[in-house]
Length: 242
Image 1 (cartoon, rainbow, N blue to C red):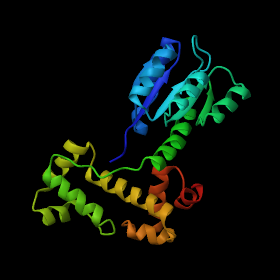
Image 2 (tube, one colour; image 1 turned 120 degrees about the vertical axis):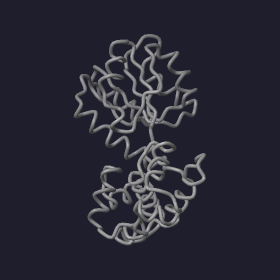
Image 3 (spheres, rainbow, N blue to C red; image 1 turned 135 degrees about the vertical axis):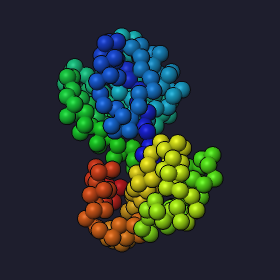
Image 4 (spheres, one colour; image 1 turned 90 degrees about the horizontal axis):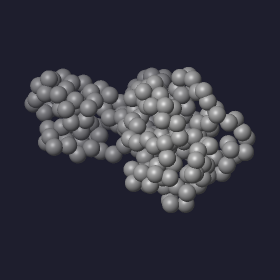
């Protein structure tokens, strides 16, 4: 099941915030806006309380600039990604952002294509730093299925086989994943296989082909294509980046 990452938006213009919330296709990238504010001072406390995964902020704002906001949040120990979206394409602003460990600096107006490129890179970073954990649901049947899948990633799995293994219907299996995890059996299986592959790439010296097979992919090129779709880089690039 793909992780839904949380976003907080800061801009002193209410119309800009509203436009960002409505016009940007957050859900397509597993992102959700959990808060926003036109007052950076109020936003500062809300961000510390909410602890979002990413903060988008303008630079020039009354009471507190976006860069001052980032500096203060870093001093408070907040571990998240920062993206500055500003009307000012100034190198000194971008340099200050990088100094505070910011992720990217975009100059308004930002196109959907630019957002797409940003989100691809942002998700690759977030997926590396926050791997998924094994969920524990209120359904005993689903918990048993999840444990079985995680312990047998190298095997071929399909709904028909699961119904035989656990003596439940295909419809019941599908309903369990939808109701408790808001995903499908296929999507969940792919996500845990990719998570396991990413972990092995960083913690072992196994060949990528070996990792692919151990994660249930006999087709090496298909494995690489799926991995790139999730992490926005090849398995080899992912391993080298760390």
